[in-house]
Length: 374
Ligand SMILES: Cc1ncc(COP(=O)(O)O)c(C=O)c1O
Image (tube, rainbow, N blue to C red; front, side, top):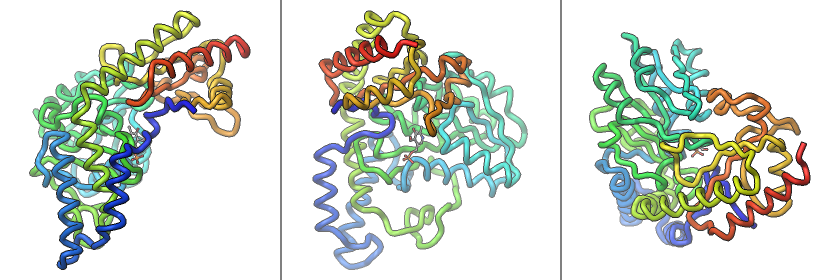
């Protein structure tokens, strides 16, 4: 079985799993309990907070643990209902965990401006600046896109936001472990993360909240996570996230060069056997290891199914539902016509993939394309 869908999720690291099993079996105390069982769990949670903070260059008290990337985004966005400034600027290619929330928030009086992207999937910071209004309360632009891998100019957007005193949030779920993340350098006020995208467990994430930024909780109950996220902590999950973040950030340079070499090899070999391939994204601002490729001769459902029959997992640039291929809204926003949009694959390599595996993928694609061409 060959797995090339690491943007969907990553397999958990062995050492993270071992640590989590140990925590789950030995340290079951509630971190809020005063006795030593509780104190042990508390110290594990706080150690993980320090690891996460070090991984992204902030202070531990600026990290809140959540139930994943979706929840971290929701926590930021639902705060807009408490604010006077109810206008938000975002991009047309954000994840549904931003765009669908904003759509819902319109029912609560929010107004939303969607900034278009260019054909490589990049937002123009000047376009954001032009859309700022007196009632703009938040700018939210993802660090890197999950379908095409385009990296956005965060520092430029942050400086525009801060000139006008507007908070800047970025969904960095796809980025941690693939590119270096430093919240000081990128200038963000809020940033979302998800452990299962960097070889950690599913269902646990983190939100960076710059010191001085005040939020209201989304999940209400006990006083956990600085009263911002009620509910007994997922101690093993948090410990897993902390260790996975430390390892991901510590190995980011070598991971990046390995992923780049796999993607380079794929493009080189695949273009040789199939010169009609069209690569989407921005080569100058590209998440390592993510290849979004249009194969004009075969639809993505045929490609996906036939790869799966050979034990090879990739995903389509577009969502398949009930046998019909829906065009991807991200590719649409990049101006890619529907007939090409539905003939696109997302191949996302991971740290454990090898060059031999890339060669097998190319051979399989070559074979399937020859068989199903039109
Ligand atoms: C860019 C982006 N944001 C948010 C999410 C959601 O994260 P989670 O699965 O942890 O809720 C994903 C996951 O696919 C993502 O790619």
